[in-house]
Length: 132
Image 1: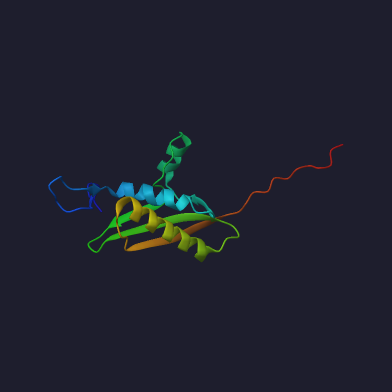
Image 2: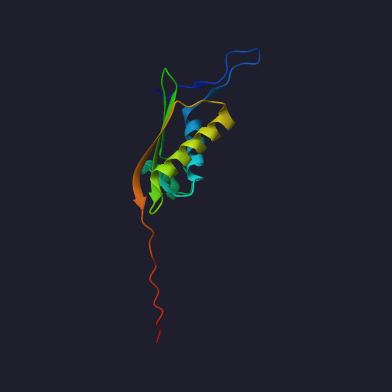
């Protein structure tokens, strides 16, 4: 996928054409994924981690969009909470992404692949209840 590739949404008309950058699809899919209960985090790279520490939220983190001849493929890399049903949460993520992209861009997505790259174990905070 080249950096300048845009997804054409509408054919040429009297008013002009509409094109969407893959980064826009990444952001929409990222937000739709984090809305699902059970998603602990999205996998990112070192650069997105540094950007988030500086205060800017990276909504496209953990999403890979590929534009092919046949359509749009989306890969989602997530860390899920411990104790949830993985197939159920994965299906909810796929449905939410497909719905959000249909509502906002009118795009039909060919594939939404969910990659579970980790499980987040809840940290228990020990409190000392016997104070002397």
